Image 1: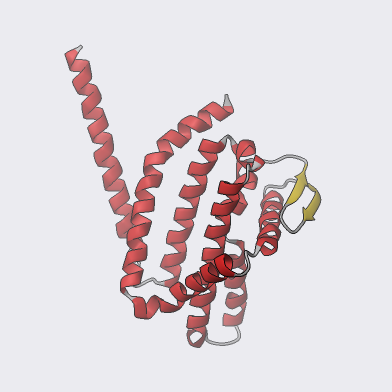
Image 2: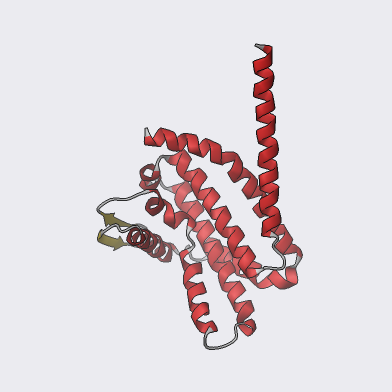
Amino acid sequence: MAKFLKFLLALVLLPITCLIVWQDARLLLGVLAHLRAAIYFFLGAAVYALIHYKWYDFSRPYVFIHEMTHALAALLCGIRIKDVRIGQESGYVKMVRTNTFVALAPYFVPGYVILVAMLFLLRSFLTDLPPYRPIVLFIVGFFMTFHFIQTFHTLWETDQPDLQLAGGKFFSCVSIVLANMLVLAAVLKILFPQEVALWTAAKHVAQQLSAGGQIIVNYILGKLKTT
């Protein structure tokens, strides 16, 4: 019953997710239009993609952060961890129980980006960060691309039990895409506060949902009148 309800929830979230994906694409294009401000971010993204597909796929670092994110999410939810195992290509975290957030956290939480942000936040207490902005942009671009490419390959190439534990593949995939798009929008706003109009994008999503909902309501009312 719970999986069926999550399936229905995913159906409701699907159009919202599609609209947010579209708005994120527009936000990225808006940032790209200010290339002088964003060049280090996109350079970091390009460098990671080049290394990943040309020389080294970073599988071990990904397995490490994937399992650590499971573990930290479990601790945040008050779930006891029994064992953690990290290998070259795979790993696992044994817990007394799990939930949707714990199961899906590694697929939408960019762990290395958060670590970098914490390090630079600590650094900001010691010295001014503006001189280091190009380095921050490069590293965040590098690790955001790491997160997206690794997540895509993990979901595409392997049958992840996490998706079933979270409530089924359809619900999990919709939730992962939606959560990643929200995270990406937040990261872009933090990095490029002047170039990213997040509130405007949110209003566009709300307006499009309202218009779509009105069309559906009018269609249903029209059908009822003809019966």
